[in-house]
Amino acid sequence: MGNKVQGEGDYESARHYNDETRKFVEDKKKKGESLKGDAKEATEQLSDAEKTALKHAKSGGQDKRDADILRKLEKNR
Image (cartoon, rainbow, N blue to C red; front, side):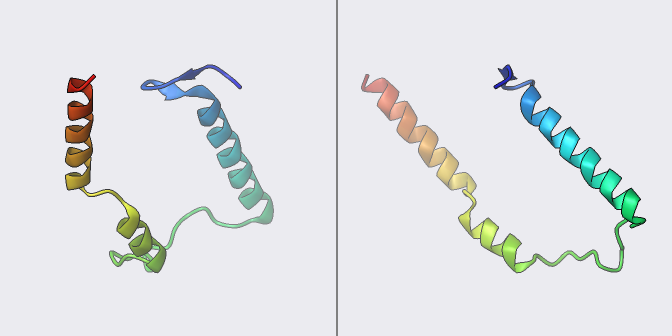
C-alpha cells in the first residue's frame, strides 16, 4: 500500500481513479461512443437511489450531537 497523505490527498486512490477514468475513456473511444451527456436527460429530480442515499445521510443535527458527545467524553477522561 502506498503512502497516504490525508488532508492533501490519498495518492494511491488518486492514481486508481485516474487509471480507471483513462480506461473508461479509451474504451468509449475504441467503441466509437460519445462521452458527451444529453441535456434532455438531465433532471433536477432525484432518482430512487439518490433518495435512498439521502435517507441514510447524516443531518447537521447529528453532527452537532456527535461533537457534543465527544466533548463530554474528553472532559471525563
